[in-house]
Image 1 (cartoon, rainbow, N blue to C red):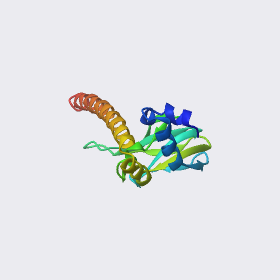
Image 2: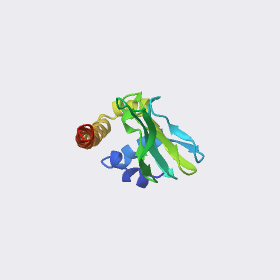
Image 3: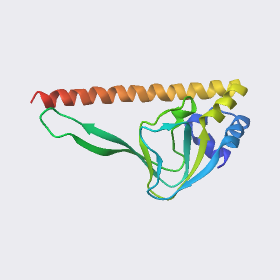
Length: 164
């Protein structure tokens, strides 16, 4: 992976060349075959992934139970990610339970960044740490806003459905 690709990733776009190189030095390559699971929803994880080549599908298990009806479970595709996209960035700050499953749709080349390694770098280079925390915080705020809007829409639809 090059500095130019890393710079295109919004998470790292505010870093200077020296800081980008420090992040790049922490990355290691991992490959997956088509159909392999990269992340499984519910597992603990502490790695972020950057797609170098290929495509991954991000999906979530959906379980619906309505009184008086049989429970329904299915896997819902949320998004398809390609070269330059990334996932798992929350794990850079804290090891956490994965909120979705990520599966290789094609043969896949990824760069992997481990949470402990980036946390050590952030502690050693406080300017880099501040910049990364600021960008991650902004991204999480945007996602929280979108999630709140999605919940509002779902609650409205659910209220409508049960009041029919």
